[in-house]
Length: 444
Image (tube, rainbow, N blue to C red; front, side, top):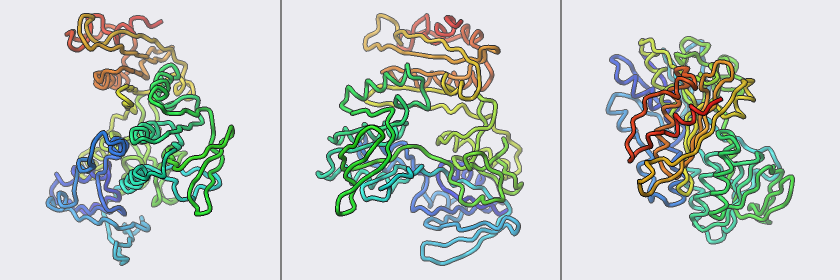
């Protein structure tokens, strides 16, 4: 069986590794980029010089897959797909055009950054952060003495992380977002404002509830400032981080899509064409919190959907169990993690929810280097099913704890059942009255 995979980042890599564990499957991988498997989540950590090199951000190499029998076509653009004839048409790095036929096709074309449609968006000195090359370009900008004042547009995960990175490189940083807080897509204001305070305490200038309306440049076509609905600012560099959307250049009118253009797939990764599968950020995913189809662009989701799609392509029926969109961030040592829905997100989705908040020290009271942990559990009012959780602390241990709430959402655990969950106690890790179960016990 011939299988073509278009896209060699997280979903494509996971699909290829899975398929190559089966006999008699011929795998060919296409990507227009020069590299594969880039962990973009490490870009800001490197730009901020918390790590010195990017070597370990590539966890798979072409030669690894070639050794397993795959054919790798990097720097090759797939121009179109003839779904009826089961063929793709491409242009390789030498400019040669070619075609390849398939029995099954896996689309793993990922996501693309949202480009603000405002005047001046084509000026030099405006950057995005998605590909490795874009990270390199931003890093080179940070090395310029002439770049003193940096504007970051968008205070989601990437924007907040690159704001920290730029400040660590000695830049004056202005962070903009149309929302009233940072990280508004993941956390309720009561949590996000703690991160806002953390950013201000480290010298980041916040401009929230403010919408960029135009960029302007100097006589050389280089960015020199931006205008918002509130004021005008002089800056030397702009990094756009306003979000991502599905990158679906090949589905055309043939494949059914979701409202944002993502390829609509079932729990097996199969599209509306039975010989075409999709995985990762180019496709939809099932939400355990919503219990419905949604779109969540995360590397962890891409890996899981790539594995599921590949097994089904190979003939092993495997149904994905969905995701909760579990995520985390650490800025200047302050950690925040969440899963499922915030109160705001649940209400936008039309769900009637309640929530319970709690705050206590993470470790036994007599332990040194102890820190407060803050938690919110969100649950449906009628069913009392847990649909979301948020945590914040200066201790990294919360990163593992949020996974338990992801499982609770997946399995439909109620707030009342969670309250009596058996959690071990050891003062190096927690308290006998664990803040997570205490939060649940205090629910209405």
